[in-house]
Length: 258
Length: 258
DNA sequence: TAATAAATGTCGTTT
DNA sequence: AAACGACGTTTATTA
Image (cartoon, rainbow over the protein chains, first blue to last red):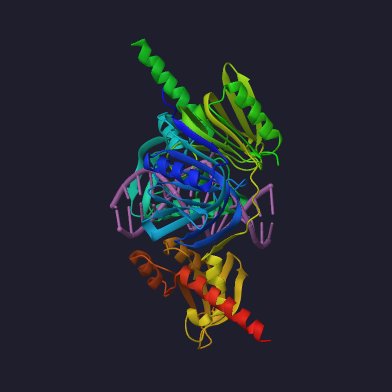
């Protein structure tokens, strides 16, 4: 079996160029380390002076320049970019161009520490739990999570300004609007809820409840919420994830009983 | 001079473990490629099934798992995480723990394509131009950019709900509130402006102008703006960046005249 | 294409 | 520590 990667330790710029060109043409994932500077022009402009960084070029046209610190890349291009490599004035120049926003990022290497062309095969599933979507699912599966007697009527109910996360009726039959947040509720969340109430709660003769669901709420936000006559219910996304897991398990075990 | 990097092509898990441990203890930047699965538990939970990915471990405790596609990492930890590597059941396990939020990401490699321990030296300056801050600076340097006769009075003026980007007087001496956006103005931007007007424009006998500055504005947003009696002025962050560049040049040349 | 909201958002600043 | 807004935010969803 032929080798699926080419890894060069301290290559010359010429060797690096040749290998990068090969990797780009074959749509491989390329990792480059070396001394470089980076110029970016597009929605903004930036200049990164000389230093040693990692560059990752992916087959889908996304590119990342990483310093040896920080979580976000210092410079980047989202997917769909086009790579052009060349040797100019004793420098390896990698131009990453993105048509959208007419953006260009140019990485200029003056010396190379490593060039790796990798053929990464990745078809594994990725699943994320405890998202806002999961909170919605959990309450739809087990409405008592919100409160006893709650009955969902609709979810993602389209109203003028957007979508109501959950629309339902409480045990008294009163129309109830539910807004979900997977993180501490902000003033924004209350305003979002208000926006929906402004179009739903038009008839003064009919009472409508508004409930903000979140794992946490600030004092000021709670005050704003109360001043509008809205309510807060503490539910964490993790608990929702657990509910889904249990319910799925139950569904599965019930399936096996058949 | 001793080599500043260790690069292994298709190492065994044992070799990989040894090299990664060395790199971690010496606070190097580590790049690993290989077949792995990833589990994350913290603010949310996730499971990434088997596949070939890149892992980057930085000396500051930030960690990134990159698939061969997409701009964002599929899994990650922000700076401040702690690495623990071990060999378990014929698998190289890298545990990345972050005290904040009690988050843990576990990458389990079943085979290795590459392990690179790099000593990246990076002290280069990074500068970004055409930020919202730059727009503020440009208008303060050259107020006519906003409109003829405009006179800034204050910037980042603290009022109850936050900070007014620029506060000034127009050529008639009328108090003017300016809100800056470096991207297309959204409804949010108008509401932000309204928030400030609600506390500034209290005296009906005194006229106060509100101007939203942005490179672009949507039709609906323009309507909302107009309905409130506010104004829109088109200015791009790029033009502001140019003004700053020119002005700095002018200041510099004036400096040399002395 | 435009608008809107979510994100394991992250990151800085200011109270 | 908490709140708030910027970010080259990116990304997905929906009208």
